[in-house]
Length: 104
Image (cartoon, helix red, strand yellow):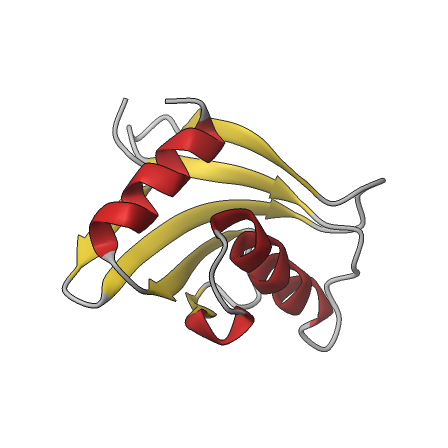
């Protein structure tokens, strides 16, 4: 299984499959798609209107990875279920944190 992120010089790009309007906010581990790409599965209570679900996702990931909310931003897939989040910080530490979240 491939990792649901790609290291960068200033952090990581995290690949997420988001389900909005869920019963609760939570991270459900890693899912591998038919094409072999992995995504972190996440659910948020927010609705996908006016960027509310994206904002809720950014806050939840920031809290889970123990980074400031300002370090997390959606850079691709703003209106799609599959999103790419850019997380600024130490790439090695962030990678370890994501692996711990995903149960790898």
